[in-house]
Image (tube, rainbow, N blue to C red):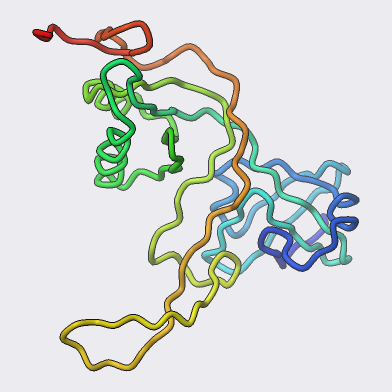
Length: 214
């Protein structure tokens, strides 16, 4: 087994030629949020990954093996529930309400301008349908939002010397660490039949509906 104990976030500083020659490994979110796991890369090598505790691996990161070889991480497509606003009766701002309710339940959510993703939970899916949102089950890479107080492992945080004026305080300026999600947007996975209840049918493009006086 080849030991891996170093990660280069998004391959920063590595040449394109090196990255093109590197082996790849497909990992779902369950594995990528662990700091210790085993996997097999595209070259058939068995990898034993031992990263600092709290490290989260993202698609596009590069693992460095003990022999110096590189392994590019690819976020593997996995079952997810995708939430979109109803094109007939909703607005994009409905996704803000959905994100609020999912976050209130401590659900890991991937945030995009036109949709949300989270791991299958059909109780939550039905709740969102009742809120006039369209919920479908798909296969897609999953890159949930990192927590505001995520572990400072150095892999996915960058220090910025921002100076902020705070009213009512005389504390000196301080730096803030901000988490930066991957810049590349993963492609949409293959749609699957909706596995959540769809008793409400609101219109042609809507997975729900109610008896409203329009």
